[in-house]
Amino acid sequence: MESYSKILLQEREKGRTINKKRVEKILRKLLIELGENPDREGLIGTPRRMAEAFEEIFAGYTMSSGLDVSFSEETDAIIAKDIQFYSMCEHHMLPFYGKVHIAYLPEGKVFGISKLTRLVEKYSRRMQIQERLTKQIADEITKMGVRGVVVIAEGEHLCMKMRGVRNHSLVVTMAHRGLMEQKELRENILTLISNSKPGLRSF
Image 1 (cartoon, helix red, strand yellow):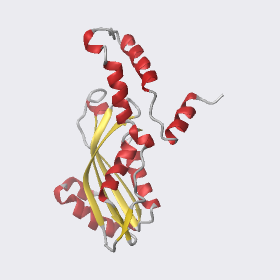
Image 2 (cartoon, one colour):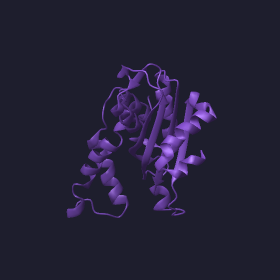
Image 3 (cartoon, rainbow, N blue to C red):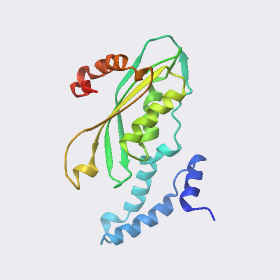
Image 4 (cartoon, helix red, strand yellow):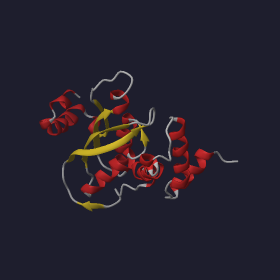
């Protein structure tokens, strides 16, 4: 018999959304375990609202980035800065959020700018860690045949702010592929990205 997680993964690959009724029942039980009364006025619709929110928050599992939509154009480098993202830490299921910066060297074709935002959403709207998020974005762009790419993510983690060490530090991760492995070229690109972000110049 197939495992429950395997069945869910197959459903996601087919583009199916979560079973909201099933999620509602699970969340109702969770409220009871937390010592709450799910039938009191303020919580009557909470399981339903949470199920609807989860469908949106975790939509990345069935999203397409649309990077296959590209246009013939010769240019040296393209930088998209300050792409906002919201994700869920897979360790504590608490949000982390911030901005992603993408710079790539096209090979005769450029992506629609909105597709880079969709790519970030594809990998952020799921259970995630920032390190993997950064690498997945870089890897998918690389697979599209670009000459090089560097991805930088800046994130604030509520799992570190609300609990545990309760520290407000900013987490910065980076992934580089192709020609961006060359330090001099990467530093030139990072200088352009970091004009308004001095803290990134040390990479």
